[in-house]
Length: 246
Image 1 (cartoon, rainbow, N blue to C red):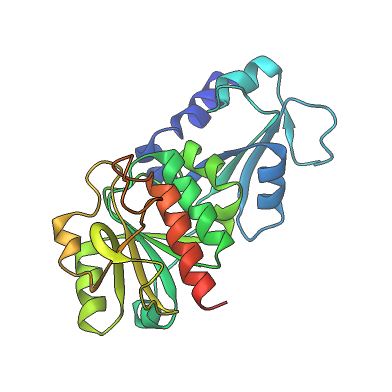
Image 2 (tube, helix red, strand yellow; image 1 turned 90 degrees about the horizontal axis):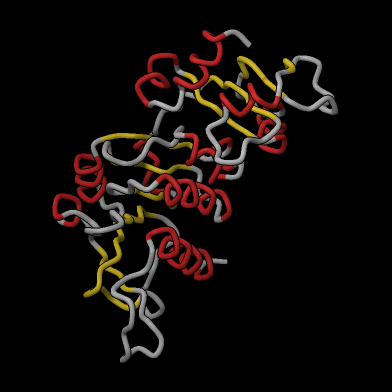
C-alpha cells in the first residue's frame, strides 16, 4: 500500500471524512462477507491472508493491515464501503414499531441497539442529531452485520416526536416514575424512545411522550443500581412489546 492509501483509509475513522467521502470501514471476514452478499457497494477490500477466496481483494502485509485497521487487534480483512442512503417514511410511523434514540453517544451502545432492532424485527432506528454516528467503526463492529438490514436515520427528534404524537401515534419512553411495563397496555405499533446514557430522555423529547414506562427491579421494593444500561433497557422493552403480540 502507498502512504496515501493508508492515510485515506485511516481518515475514515473521522466522521467528517466519512461524510465527505460517503464511505465507511468494515472489518472481519464474516462481516465483509455479508456486505459482499448485500446491496451495499464495496469500494475496496484489503486482506493479509492468502486463504481468502475473493479475487477482488488486494493482498497487504500484516504490518500494513495493522496500520489501516481501526481495531485493537486487527482482523485479516478490511473493506471500504459506500454508505447507504435511506429515506424515512414518516407517514407510516403509526403502523409499525420504531426505535428512537435521544442522545445515545456510546458507539458500543448504539451498535448493540441496532443489533437488537434487527433481532426484534424493527426496521428503522431514528437518532437525534447528537447521537453517535452509526458508521463509526466501533458501531459497525458492534452491530454484527445488523447495519445491513436496519435503516438508521438522523433528524430533529423533537420535531419528529411532536408530529407523531399530534398525529395520534403512541410515543413510549422509559422513566423511573413510569407505569410498570409488565402491567401496561402496550400497542403493536408506535415509537419507543430511549435516552442518553447519563441523563436519560431529555426534557425536550419527554414532553411529546404519551406513555411513560418503567422497568421494575427485583424485588420490586428493593432498588439497587440507579438505572439500567440503555442497550440492556432497550432489549427488555423490545422483548416485552414483542412478547405481548407474539
